[in-house]
Length: 508
RNA sequence: GGUCCUGUGGCCGAGUGGCUAGGCUCAGCUCUGCAAAAGCUGCUACAGCAGUUCGAAUCUGCUCGGGACCUCCA
Image (cartoon, protein in one colour):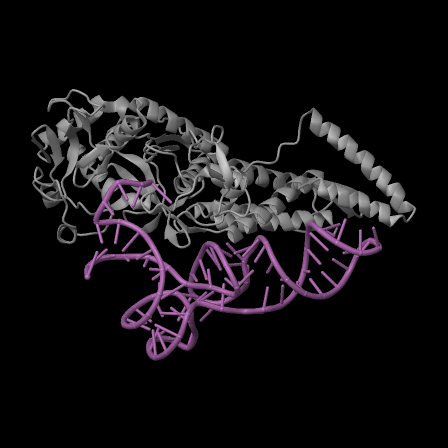
């Protein structure tokens, strides 16, 4: 097994990864709250963890990857413990059942994940499907003295917990700091301490989503679902817990407190956090209103105001999107994300995206060239060394930008060999094919353009015919006609390339 | 206001106490009937000031700028 180093938020250092059970990894990632469509910032986080999931499997681990779906219990104002349940509110506004809201957005979410080629997790549990587990965990926390009931609500007693535990392990903030630098909030009267958060909320009569509990009819708090479900599927202590770094100070901090309050020990060995996607240097978030949707990026179009859904297959589009100069394919977007380390902010711009598109095409074009390479008796370049560099990059906290740099070195070599300026023997060509398959396809999850089917075959035959005819024209030095053929193919989206070994073509 | 992160060449974006990141763009060259593609070469950067060091873009301090969190947020 490769020695893998992962940056751990708990220690703020890169640590050698040691799973609890040899060759098995338990990984939990906080998934979406399905009260609206996922935006591209959400996608970046899930894609980052998808790469980790893929790489862990690639180096031989059996991974159980759990990513929850929050379909209940996420209040509009978590800290104050007031406001409506987010999904319940959408249900009321759209005059649908809450489960209809969840169904709509989870369908869209899965479609986007699939388009961007993120693998489905091993288990995708929903909060509403785990109410008994959450109630049970809440009871244990009460028994251990870290939570109290008040008028049908159950709150976690942060200050009491902090006396015997480090509440700020993840955020690095002291309790005093948090107590003294929190803004004045409404709806605090029921809580003993201002940092206390809800484990269970009493449901008001108009609240649609409600369950019976030892404390009356209500619904679970937001944080408890992740603690309950991760414990159920991965155990009281598991290897990796991930999420966006904006979850550190509240959601994850409270998850740790709940699990410790319930079980008496820390739930997670390695906390991994991904950085934000920014637009003009500012974090993309729903509250700032600077979000755009995957379907908009993939089409370059704007979602119509009356579109019934933002799910790519169902979306109604309305004119060009003001932000995008063109459409960018999911593959290109994925490649674009890989060019930045997951822990750095990633800034969106047309210029950057177009640069990625060209780089991506060049890399994939070299893949096609690789398939056609003719072996020599000997190799003039060291392929094994590059393979090692690829692993070294990924083993250093999943450093995809360095991995890509090495893959581009492969591309350069492939092109040079194709130009007969370097040589590779058959074994090294096979090794390059393995590197490309392993890293481009399996680990990075980038897709090759599919070229199969009858129409593709027919086009190929037609192109061979055109190229043959053009060659005859060229041999007669009728360059005007040869250029006309080339130009008109260009207009049709086909690029002709005259090389030493004959003419090739690509679809633009 | 408090806590913390960050500032790299035209753009994006890695990394590190001394050794080439990489991609895109731009210019020149090779190849070519001409293009395109590909290859090669060049544009050789680390916010500013001071300090530590044989040596710093990489460590320390200060200044200026950007951002995140402290409210829901991936």
